[in-house]
Length: 167
Image 1 (tube, rainbow, N blue to C red):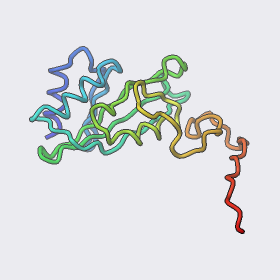
Image 2 (image 1 turned 180 degrees about the vertical axis):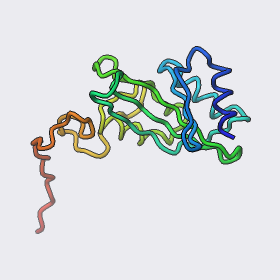
Image 3 (image 1 turned 120 degrees about the vertical axis):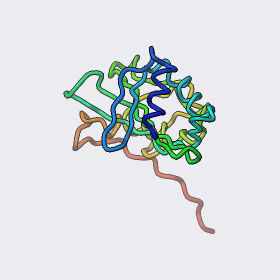
């Protein structure tokens, strides 16, 4: 069933599709960063698509294996249409290019997922309403799931909270 979703995306957004593939029933469309919000809006609001459920957003680091280095991967499901789709956006390592537009305006439920990818990989989500660390503390330096993150890195200590004194 998801093959029809892939075909619909390719037909509707031919200039935005970088590639498509399927492996063991998981259909994937790699899309251009600039078309992500438009494609997401189509997937959610078109009655034939009806992808109301954002299942997951994750980051991938291909350090030394390919360029661009990073990928942001979105998994969506349509309960009513009984299909799933995976969208991928390739992201450059250069800090000025290490970003994708946020999909929080389309699915509020991707908010925490996008924050996790920011926290762990350092990929910014432009337009995100509250892009700040979600798993690590604010003083943490770097992004722990990047493959070049040192295994024995020492981090600044978290400030100790002040507790109320007993009388």
